Length: 145
Image 1 (cartoon, helix red, strand yellow):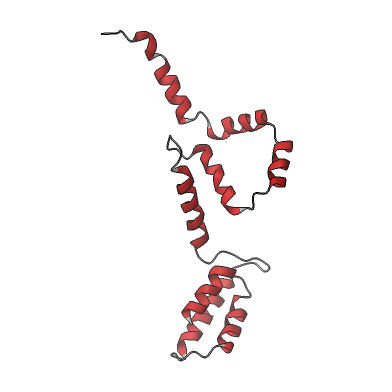
Image 2 (cartoon, helix red, strand yellow; image 1 turned 180 degrees about the horizontal axis):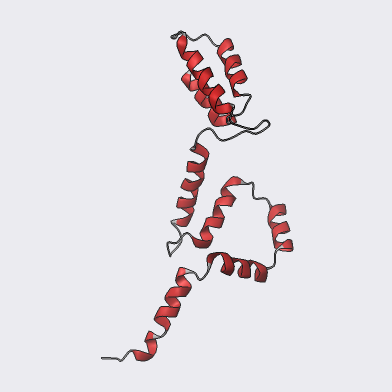
């Protein structure tokens, strides 16, 4: 029974309809358990789902978020300089179907100069840019031994 409710909540989230769905799943299954246990689940789902506005479904587990951050970590591990900065934008790539029409529309509607200005405003100077600024002045002071 716990696997059934866990699978349901992981794949469908939690909403005001969760109690009804759980009760239906329970009626279709032949569980040999303590009779108080299903009622505890119904009480818990009722309490939690009553706080959710009608027509809204919320994530019930963090599995999806953990998966997305796992993909982000795998992607960012290939970056030479480790910083969250602009690479955080790659997270959205894990949540969508990136088709040629989506890429085409993005390239036709967003100018590089606008993106660069927005990026500078939001993220500021990158770590690599900061390093270049700091170390660029050292060339003139260096003497060959």
